[in-house]
Length: 533
Ligand code: SF4
Image 1 (cartoon, rainbow, N blue to C red):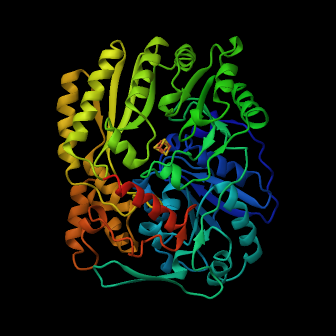
Image 2 (image 1 turned 90 degrees about the vertical axis):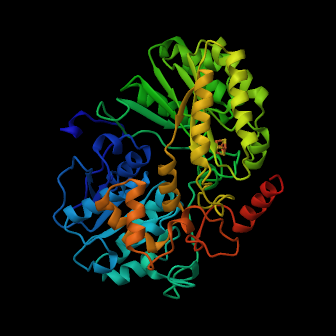
Image 3 (image 1 turned 120 degrees about the vertical axis):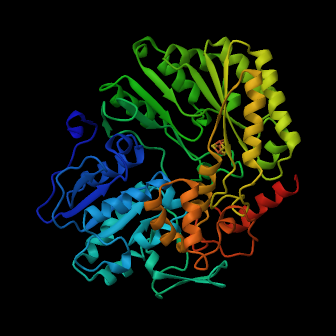
């Protein structure tokens, strides 16, 4: 049984007799779910409350579930897992639409990065959505639930909607300019609830650390610590930065090192997590700490690092701790495009990173980039190819890989108004051919998948029936197109969501959900980018 092999790094609190029965689900397999640091930590927070009796549920494993759960929570970190949410609701005999549920059904709540970014395509399935950092919003939500427990469903929802960061979609009416047009207005349905729900922020120098280690995780026996949250670089397309601002760093002495010590008592696999871990101001001290002989057998995995922090020492330490290659995000070989996206990085720094990686005896360097960045021209692609040719020259022993995706507009970023560039598909093909000829391994992310991502990323509530249809058709772009055809006249076409550049005056599906920065600031950043195009 999956759960038997778990090492818990926290102590469960026994539940009091009248504890609220809660199911906390991850809409994917146990192996995937238990590797999500966010899921682990929220589960542990629930399990440490005496007023909650929590059971876990995955698509292929479950603890003993309560017969009458009062709350059913989902942590959603991958868009296409919505299929599994619907499957699990059906398996539990819970209607998938909020409007079909009554006082006998649990309140269905959700959280996690996908729902915080743009919950609207999924809004009709959730009674409650928790926006922002789980550590900040979970406890106030549960306390408010305790206070209205026993009341009718509608009274509960009204009470919960007044808690900062708690979004009750059914209490907001969305109207459209026309059935197939843009959103006209989003109106709260009660005076007591806010017109704009503010995403909540965890303000602390203690960040996340694994609460469970298991050989059944997708990264076997990994112990994860969050080194930083958000990223101060603010590349204009980047959700990982804009949605989670402000940039926070774990306190090295008081929180990070003690957390690492706790984890290394039960495993020797350590994952350092964060959008850009080497941005931690004491990252070198952390590295020196882990370079000590007592950590010789520790296997270290590190998320993407900032290019200009790839020193020979970093490469050496990582190579001696089992890391074979490093990943850096360069976005493009074109300095002009990097300026447009606000990536403060020069080709000379990328070359130096490659030289240092090779000198530190790493075997490979993986660069990440994108096609379809607003303003991209064929000349910019030539510059990317030229950059790789130069890297081959300066670091000939390094295996070079280029992981390349297509630009996808993300909510709450300055590029949220742009669409996906339909030229991107051709450009991926061109890069594949030309980089292959240079001996660079090219790993493109599927263009079709970028189109689906962008649909969900900029979707509104009219996508609900479409997502319910594609669930039965499969998750290919062809299935989505088929569903659009079937629903023609009931919602805008695919192009509207995916490719069109939206006017800045248009009401966005998430206009009533505030991220860390006001829309005026995003517009200023957009104008700065546009001046360079
Ligand atoms: S450096 Fe990376 S994580 Fe930071 S804003 Fe840019 S793309 Fe996002």
